[in-house]
Every structure is written in C-alpha cells, then in structure tokens.
Image 1 (cartoon, helix red, strand yellow):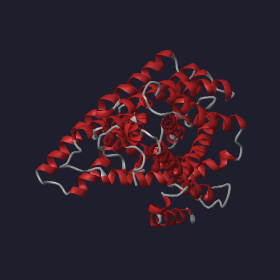
Image 2: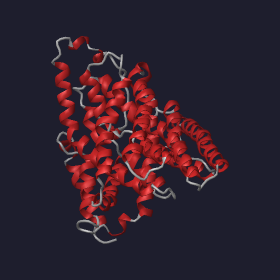
Image 3: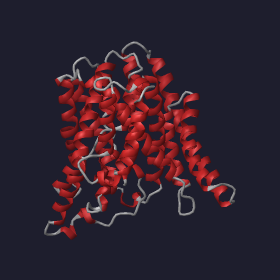
Image 4: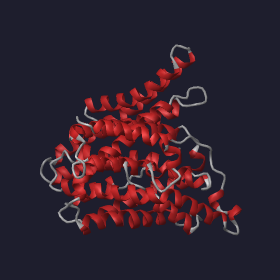
Length: 421
C-alpha cells in the first residue's frame, strides 16, 4: 500500500488537533481531506498506492452512505421539527422537485451527449444537499434557530427522498438505451423500491424495540447498544440488497423508523454511529480527492458551467419559488438558496451506481458530478463561516428584527453530530 495510509492517518490526527479552531475559519473538514486526496493522488505525489482502486473506494463510500443515511434520518425524526414543519416542508416539497427538474432540463440543454433519462439521472444526483460541507451554516448560534433547523432537516431528509426518484430515472435510462425491456424495467424497479420500503422500517422498528428492551432490562452495556445502531444500519442495507431491494433506501427508512421509536431521554444510542459516520465522511472526501484528480485535468467548459449554474442559479431559483409567500426576507431566501452544498450523496451515487452501469453517458455524468461537488466543497466551505455571520449580522440590524418571521420560536431538536461541531 505504500506510504499513503500513513499520510491519511496523520491527516486525521492533525485535523483532530485543530478541528475546533479550523471550523471557525474559511477552511472546512471536507476541504482539508479533499486537498489531502488530491495531494497523494496520481496527478501530484502519486503515493496513494491502491487506495484509489474503485473496489476499495466503492466499499468505503457505500458503508459511509448507509451509516449517514440511517443516522441523519433517525436524528431528524427523533427531533421536534414537525412542530414547525413549514420551512423544511417548502424546501423538500417544492424546492427539491424544482431543483431536480431544473437540473434535468439544464443538463439536456447544456451538457452534450446525454440522453433524456440520463439528464434526469444527473439532475437528481445533484439535488440532495450535505450539511457537512458547511457546518457553520447550521450550527452558528447567531443565525436564527428556525433557519438553521430548516436547513438541517432538509439536509437530513432530502437524500432519502431523492433516492427512489434516482432509482426510477436510472432504470428508465437503462430501459431507454436497450439494456432493459419495459417489462424488465418494472421487474427491477418494483422490487428494488418495494422491498426496501418493507425491509427498512421492519429493521428499524425491531431494532428500536430490542435496544429499548435490553436497556430497560439492564442486559446490555451502553456502548454495545451504540455499536448495535451501526450494525442495524448495515443490516437493513444487507438484507434489502440480498432480497433484490435498494439497500440505501432501506437504510434511510430504517433510520427514520428507528428514530421514531428508540431515541429518547432514556436510550441515547446515537453518538457512536454519528461519530463513525463523521469519520467515514471525511475519509470519503479524501478518497474522492484521489479519484477527482484525474477528472479535473480534463474538465470541459460545459461541465464547469453546468456546475456553476447548478450551485448558483438552479438551487437559488428553486428555493426562491418555494419560499414565495412565506414572509421571509430576501436575504434569508438567498441564504437558504446558496447554502445547499452538494457532497456525499452525489459522490456515492456517482461512483457506486452510475459508474458501474452501461449507460452511454456515464462518463459525462461522472465528470459533471465530480466537478460540481469539487466546486461546492470550495465555494460553500469557504463562505460558510463568513456567510453565516454576515447573514446573522444583517438580520440583527433590521429595525423590526424582533418581529421578523425568521425569529419565530422554533423547536429544540437534536441534529446529527456531523452537522454540528
């Protein structure tokens, strides 16, 4: 393996030492680890060894997304955000579909060589947001709690909502290119989604009941209950995959149900799973940096322009429409729209699912997705701390600040550790 693993271990130790200080600067964790990946990758020092092999990368990314989907869904569902569901409801119910459709149409118009359903796949992959790329946006206490919570809930739920849509579009793309007949399309799609919807909630519910029973009966060590949460996420994924369903969708539903029935004041079992997810997320960004290096050297202007428009126009416009009539100030709508970073879900859907298909446009989809995520890592990371403070200052300076709808009392909620320093 060479010296690559030693460099990675040293990077984790070094980041841990200064993590609190770093998160209040223009530098974020994903920026650091993507930078390390680029540095040790084949385009620069070329000391990564076998770490860039697609099999290893795919395994790490898959495990990461399974745990993150489970923990994000369980954290959001265990909170009291439903007491103020208007803001996340608009973001997820209006903003997310508009972002998918607009990204789809933009891909058809701008990115050459993509078929109709391939463009839909690209638009859906780039719709989910990732709070890990700009923690200050959702953790800065100066930002109104209602706004922070809205972005947190959106980030925790939108990847799980987008996944079934992605699966549908991916199967439609396969069918339209002749690799699947119409009958094959439905024979693959229905079990893939249906089995996941059955397996996921069952694992989440049964796991929650068993953990609560073991805790109440004083049968289990607490830290083993925390380890069991990670195992439940992987169990949901493995069972669904084994029976022909989507493991990612199953893991998300399992977390959603688990959070509803397990996490309360008596059984707090989320910390180890979230810490594991946080560490794997940073490792995923590092591996992404290794893989992305070769793509960035040959990036086309169409891919770069699509990335810019997706991040700066498509998302902002979709959120603007979603917030029409909400009473929020324009500066708040801009804050909500700009801070929709693309990250882990896009990376994993690209490498784990799209890149292993026989789609004619898979290389184009992969290149555009990687370029867009790289732009997001830099742009959203560099503006998160500064932007959250500038927005908070702008809101506090309003003459009627105390009466602004942004300051309506919001629910107290637990949010994933990877989104809160």
